[in-house]
Image 1 (tube, rainbow, N blue to C red):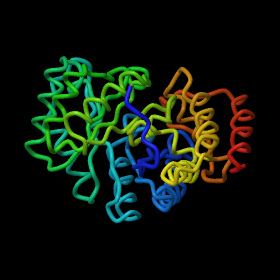
Image 2 (image 1 turned 180 degrees about the vertical axis):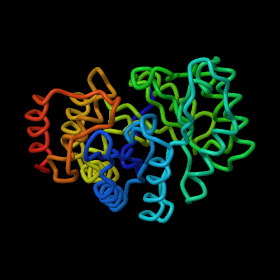
Image 3 (image 1 turned 120 degrees about the vertical axis):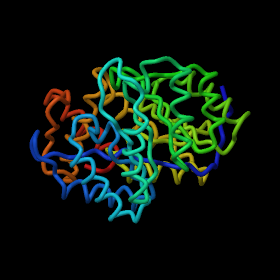
Image 4 (image 1 turned 180 degrees about the horizontal axis):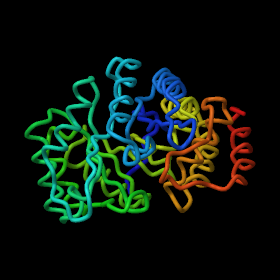
Amino acid sequence: MTPVLPGRTITGMSAVLLPHLDPATVDWASLDAHIVRTHEAGLTPAVNMDTGYVQLIDADTRVGVLDRAAAITGGDFVAGAFTADQPGAAFDLGAYLRAADEVTARGGLPVVFPSHGLNDHGDDAWLDAHAQLADHIDRFIGFELGPMFVSYGRIVSLDTYRGLLDIPQCIGAKHSSLNRRLEWDRLAVRNEVRPDFMVLTGNDLAIDMVMFGSDYLLGLSTFAPDKFAERDRLWAMGDPDFYQLNDVLQYLGQFTFRPPVPAYRHSAAMFLQMRDWAESASVPIGAPTRPDSDQDILRDIGERLGVL
């Protein structure tokens, strides 16, 4: 377990929900407004991530999201470099490079989104794939995504993670195992091997990992980028109010990231609609949903946060 680091400045990246008017129609106006408020809060918008349904939307929609993020932020965004494939597929370097180029051409920083080809062939192949990407991409973010999020998710061994830190083009990696111990181990390796490498927590069940030296790329922060930014400022100032706000945000995470975990996106859609930040709580075809009874609990949490 790494020590608590009070007063540090936290780098926050927020995975932006892609709102929908109905299961087949993106709510582009609400997306634009949410990217604006995320960026103005001081967080880096992360688009075309799992929170943005990257694996459920078509190529034209993914490019449209990138265009909007670039126009709004001037290139200050990160985005999933996604390639669709099937179980057992080989790693498709060309497809990944094309996906990454779509991001970098607009000024963004690509996140290597998981696929079968990347994850189905063992840790050595996973690490070699990132080395191949580094031969062509100047800067990128890696991504360990657990199988509770997607069926083709992979959390690699600590030795493999150490090998990732030897790739200078990889400036950080999002870790979404929802396991504190695994993340603490990665922080210890980072501190030993490459202190400038960003361990980006994706643990929506333990958002206080920022106290130990993680930065974050979270889906939970899309519910309230304003409150996450406030929390981060409190930590940097050494203000004990950090803990109270973090506790309520963590309650939100524990509730909305319960199994089935991918249904957190419907929770986010409901919460954004409650905040008048989205026209509808619709999710795209193929996304799991939550029961309507969740709305009373979400409203109570919103009231505790002072946003409803």
